[in-house]
Image (cartoon, rainbow, N blue to C red; front, side):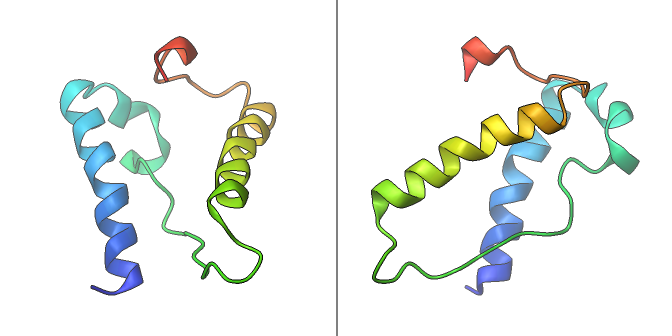
Amino acid sequence: MSPKKIVQVIKSIPAKEIFRRHPEVKKKVWGGKFWTSGYYMNTVGRYGNEEVIKEYIEKQGGRHRSIYRGQIELFDQNEL
């Protein structure tokens, strides 16, 4: 399976489930799309390990919340 296909599958599963459980969300997101079309993918090499990747992912949420703090919240943060 190509990396592009893997990303498409990974992104489609939660989007379909959220739209199934909460159809009103589709009206509140940009053009009815849950995800943007972009993604970033890279290989894990000499300096990439599980801890580095985990730290990167954990930092993404904080940055995202600070940039988009006025945007709708789909989940209570305590549920995540």
